[in-house]
Length: 490
Image (cartoon, rainbow, N blue to C red; front, side, top):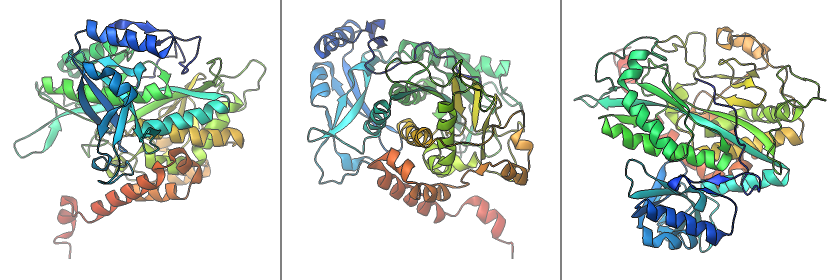
């Protein structure tokens, strides 16, 4: 729940003023010829005794997919790519008859794995027959960033991934990881004993993450038993997405060392707070890298938040399209357990859900959907920990640009109000939009929103089809709750 640090270096791809770094040997690489850069990365890998490389991309869900190749194939996976059968992967728009899906590694993303130092990891872009594949979430985000750059802007930010450590009992039931049986407080957030129990795990995460270049600056025990959060430095939208994916990969491997499962399931326990991936972001000038969210000295403070008109219009676009965006920010059925609304909805053992169910924006107030902790950034508190970050940032750009270009006014900022204490009627009177309360409702909103679908590009139809399929499968499933409630009701 802690606020992310102020941006130290708003990173702009290909900027001549800003150094891009890779974690290998902590070498920093200035923009040079591709061959010189390639040679330095390869030599760094050799010095670190790396033997194998994981060429990694994500499927439509944001789940990592990899091939392991020997270091001798370094040039091949950059130039040609590692080959995959696209029909074997969710949402690639391919069948078993399709040509090979080639994952070409991004030279700026090579990272040695601290927990398995003979292996390096690299994010990849997908190609088919030499052409960038439009169903690749990373390619799609790069497409949207290019559109944004052509309009003079770029997007920077960082995620705050919450997650649980869990175990299974002999019957296969989930329970929070609690080896000392001390993590049982109803309000365990920031608890010293809970933190001490997990200190070795969190220190491994922070140490390894920083060796991989994440810039982790703090960690804490979150609002639920067995739940934790890590805070990163900021970077550009593309690498912020890479970082979240790599963090989720890392935490799963480190948790095994402690006999736990690291889960990013949005709400694994019905009586506890769910897990989010809060997004802090700002828009910057594409040429200078200057953050354009803070109010200029000559500009009137339109909404009382110290934000520029550009920032306010960007928020206006996000709010206008928030119901469709929710289909991407909360991509699975379980995600909607976090954002339920109503006068009598049980929140959690701690008393709060920490999750918005109505769309609002305003001051430094965690009951807002779009919180303004400082004029240099906005926090989006809606994304689930299960989010595909590439898709979320792509639709963020699409909606935000719509707001700027059409000067969308989001209405008055909500100031000094506990939104959770307001009745549904009061929220509606303040102009707040109720977020979709289930996946199908969100997908139907997405189907009707051409701007957000445009942010997904070729992925949109495939995404909608898969989400409708997920909903249909769920609706055919009879839950234990239904049996308990209905078996002898009549």
